Structure formats: C-alpha cells, structure tokens
Image (cartoon, rainbow, N blue to C red; front, side, top):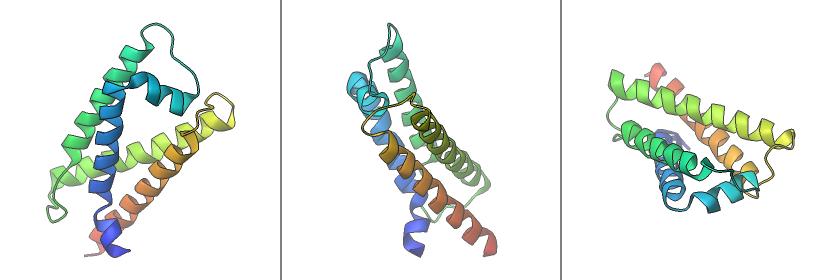
Length: 128
C-alpha cells in the first residue's frame, strides 16, 4: 500500500495524460462515454482544448517519486485538488441526471481514489 501511495502522483499523471490524449484525438467518443450525449457546435473543439490542458497538467506534475521539492509539492497539491474536484463534479452531475455516460461513475471513482492516495502520500511526507 505504501508503494501505491508513493506512486499515486505518477499514476494520476498517467491517467490525465491518457485522458487528455483521448480527448484531443477522439473527443466525440470520450464525451459520449462520459456524458452519454454529443456536444453542440464548438463542443468537440472545447473538449480537445480541455484534453490539451489535461496533457499539460499531467506533464507539469510528473516527477520522479524521489523528488520532493517545494515546486513539485505544489504541483502535486494542485493535481490532488483537481482529482477531488473532478470526482465531486462528476458524481454530482450524474446524481442530478445531467451526465448519463457509461464511464461517468468509473471516472468519478478513479479520481476519488487517486485523490485519496495522493492525500495519504501527502500526510506521510509531512510525518517524515
């Protein structure tokens, strides 16, 4: 478990890089899986822009586990907050019926678990 929490930032970066790449290359497919619908005019381009942002986030936060400087700490904090925020937003939009995609609950769960693992890692680092 300790190894998993130590690698949670890299795992989260990998998830965001993968999702971002899928949004850039196949925005209609990803949106259909998450939202359960297609987007209006301009929506696919906005999804691609969001995909590019996720790629940037994944690259900006990627660092070897051994590196624990202030900059990487802030990047990890931002990524952890993103994971919790994405989990809450996806779950709440699904519960209200706004999102009906096949992957909305798995995506919310993945974000919640990654955020939790990153929080545990953060606490472990503060105890050292």
